[in-house]
Length: 125
Image (tube, rainbow, N blue to C red; front, side, top):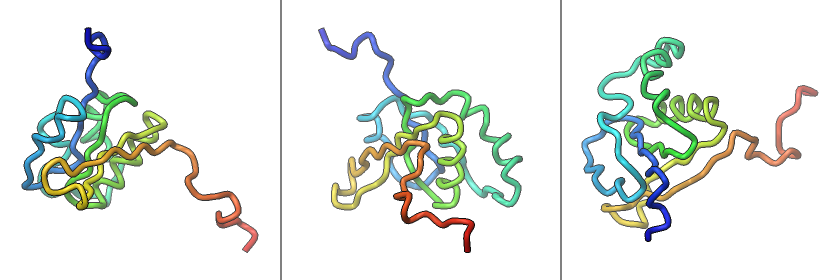
């Protein structure tokens, strides 16, 4: 018996629509369509943006993946919302060295500082 048979397959959410083939993302889980954003996104009002994508974020769990695609600024904002909601994010980031097909790799980022304490800015300046 397959050891993951009783475990639900994670979902893969795509940050923003790009004209690429996402079929290979199914290797990581159940690809959710449509992407979180499609078309122009106004990031000048982050509260409104959050309200717009909240129904999708409500379907996510800490076991799911976020595949970064499209404009970097949108990916940054969605990543921040995801980290605040779950405390960790499992990113799928494209790696050119892996080739055009199936070139995504998993990067796990906890909601803790990634900067060494001795390199952080202080308020003493």
